[in-house]
Length: 355
Image (cartoon, rainbow, N blue to C red; front, side, top):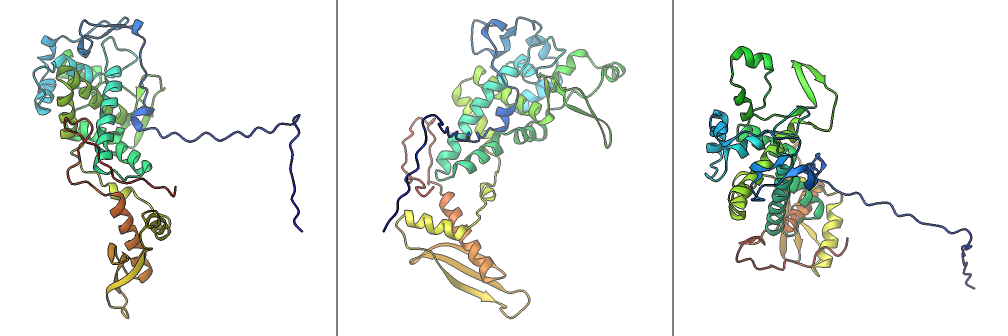
């Protein structure tokens, strides 16, 4: 005899099931204080793409092109980046000026917002077309590894040679440095300031306070926006590929598999392939204190990956991980991004249906 229990809910006591909000991944440049401005707060020039001529209603001062030509560090940075003559030196000065509390000059706040969108777009399409099987979590981590705050900070400081304006007004006065030279360095409100070795002075944070990594990264994003305004989209894409996407990022080190054997078995099942089998390829020193085993992960007669370890269990796990990475890091022979002129979509696979 089969008993069935029916559970009913009274209409007077309704049960509302609230689903937990899914965590939203934000890149480091999305966490920065990049907010859009109202059109009423800006004086728009005749040419909307001329970022150097944008002015705030409360910020009217601007370094002219003639004054920017007299700053040695601006001329050196312009030549070092191989910028076109259309890229004004005054725009480069603005790219190095962050939004500060006591600043009467135009800043790179909105330029950094536009440049971050350009960097995110070209980096994402590059990764999706180059590695079309990347999981979404690895794709976001790889994107952040290219255009996050810390990678762009390394580009601006160690590759491009942008310096901070760390000297005080007294030091500038004693060194008899021209007041104009300060615009050739990165200027921003610091969240923390190192007074002496091992002693850090924390100031009161405000809306304009930025970390060193974010300030450097915003200068790179602002320069990218300036390239787009001075030239065109193709030059901007070449600039990003030349300075940002040409850097070496080890995407294979971002993978972490808890149970690679089970994951590989489910993956092969969705592809209608034989279940994985582990076969010993070679070994040495089994009876010694440091043995070495090399095993292969096979699907039928197809070798999916090899693994080496000091035990058979370690070598088996490494072979499964090698097979998974070989699948996820698949690269087409001649990948083309959607922004190319002769782009044709490429079907890779139907995705991971077991998730």
